[in-house]
Image (cartoon, each protein chain N blue to C red):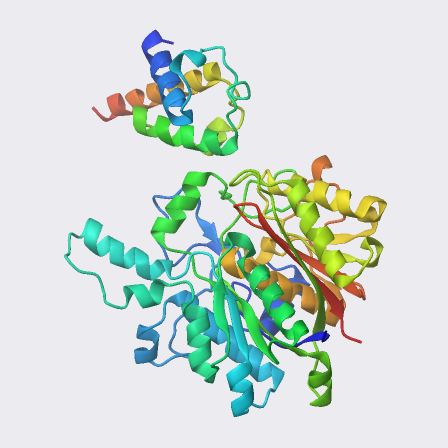
Length: 88
Length: 403
């Protein structure tokens, strides 16, 4: 997982939740950051816009922290580029 | 204080075009949930809804009248016509002048608004249809009912999301009870199957990709519904005096606000609404035998509602029968509480408790007797109908079987 991707994910979360960027790290759990279910839905919306991906409900049910979020986004980005290559 | 009788009932929903069809479906545990037909769902994460299948205004309204009415207002008038006819009320000039109309609606004429906004935003046209405003306004249902019957008394609409119709019926109940009006037509109507609204629900990630399974471990969210239910309320003695058929009695109404989170439900807030309703009815918790639950089948609602019921009823919670009829008529938002109040009235009247349909797996967090899948014959005297809205605004009605 690249640092750049991690930083983008962290920035989306900090911006959406309106908390200082430095308060969010890859080790942060959502519950520590005070992220509730409606915050999470907003963060997913912002993440979909940031990375131009669609995040299925089933993918997010078990996501509880920033690392899992980064891994999930990376997986969807890889699937997207694989799909784009397949079309070439 | 007057006792308040329900002397007329009307309904149009995914379960049928009238109360008889609605009652039959509930007694059979038959769900009206099916693939959505009125809107293209190819760009949606969910495909199912509880629609009034194959609806057309033609048997109900002439074309020119229908031009002035969004689908949700048409539903309101259709249900009100059935309820008024069922009540057998004889209109006098005095009754028309004092009768009240109180309706609930959450989103109003969304189909109309969607078309208008599509015109300007997507198609780049420079104008929208001039009836967009009067068709979209949430009070259009109440207004068209007033015009239908020439009622000139107090008429208004309450909008409290999923509790709208419960707040409306509760207010009408209190107005009849206090003597402020001698007759009320009350309920709710909704028609939320516009593409824009469906997209907004999709974004909240609370709609099930399959069906609605309240209280079941494998529940995956709510299913949207549409339709209307209306009731005619009258003072008990006046109803008796004119020989009206009394379907059931409303004996209490309670409300509360969570003052917590805009979407996360609170067991505490829900419990306060139930307690307030019981207090209004002067009943002990042990006197209640059936609860028509809010029961949305979202991960959050059902355990919270279970905890609230346990908090209010204590050991008696284990003896309560509780079901969510949203599993059959869907979540019709501002009409939902009216459909559910009607389902409760029918349960008391007919001695058949409606089931929670689509139930497959027990959930330890929802460990109530939820009447899984099959209706149950039981003569019950007192029942609750629960409604807990987004925004934390809760409303609970208490009903009693007519002798």
